[in-house]
Amino acid sequence: MPKDHRHLNFNPRKQHMRNFTPAQLHERLAQQGQQPLLLDVREPWEFNICAIDNSQLIPMGQIAASLDGLDPERETVVICHHGIRSRSVAMFMERHGFTDVINLAGGVEAWSREVDLDMPTY
Image (cartoon, rainbow, N blue to C red):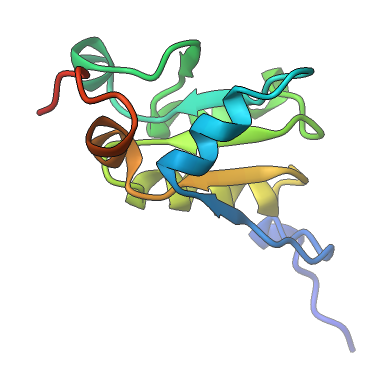
């Protein structure tokens, strides 16, 4: 008898979360057309110190309650300080039906070292 995975918010479609390096994200943002949603999942105090231009702040603890307000088909790059929280959020989003989720590997820390050398760090 098949197990009922609804209690786990199980999405049976196979998902393949991608990772972007800061250079890959910078290149993607330079392209014409629909821009990805830059979803920053850090805390407000972190976001106030530094953020990638045009990113939207939804702290990690508020993601579950905010999913209905996000487009599950839109290319979404999830961002945090070092890429750990964002990876967890990206996997969570995929399990909830988001089909084009990308983790920024190394987070804003790597972005500040590789792309925006003038970005404040913490």
